[in-house]
Image (tube, rainbow, N blue to C red; front, side):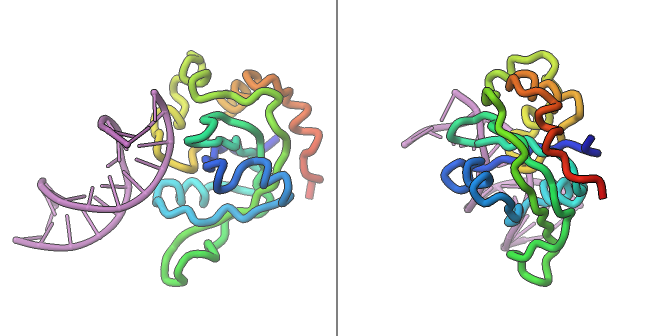
Length: 151
DNA sequence: GCCAACGTTGGC
DNA sequence: GCCAACGTTGGC
C-alpha cells in the first residue's frame, strides 16, 4: 500500500488522463507554486495520486502512481528550487467522481481540494482516497493489482 | 465571460 | 514589513 496519497489537477486540453495512458509515464513538472512544490517534494515512490481534470470535466478520472521520487524540475532555471516527479497511470475510475459529488459527500468535507481550491498539487488522506475510489465504483484490489514489484 | 480567491510583486 | 496592484486559477 502506498505511503501517502495526493491529488493533481490537469486541464484536459493540456494533459488529459488519456495522454498519460498513451505515454505510459510522464514527468510532472512546471509547478510554480511554493505550497504545491512542497507537496511534490513530500511525495515518494509508490504514492498514489488522484488525477483530476480541472475546468473541463471537473472530476477525478483516474489514479496514477509516483514512479520516481522528487528531483529538481528540469524545466526550471538552474538557480531556482522547483521539483518534479515521474508518474504512470494505474487505472481509470469506472465512474469519474465530480467536484459536485465530492462537495456533497459528508466524508469529504475536509478534503484539501475543497478547501484550497486553487492549489494544483494537494494532499489526500487515505480515507479520502478510499472514499473517492468507492464513489468511482473502483475497487482497491483492482488498483493494487498493478502495484509495483517490491524492490 | 465573469469574478472570487489568493499568491506574487514592488513601491514606500 | 506593509499593502495596493496585479496576475492566475478555476468554478460557475
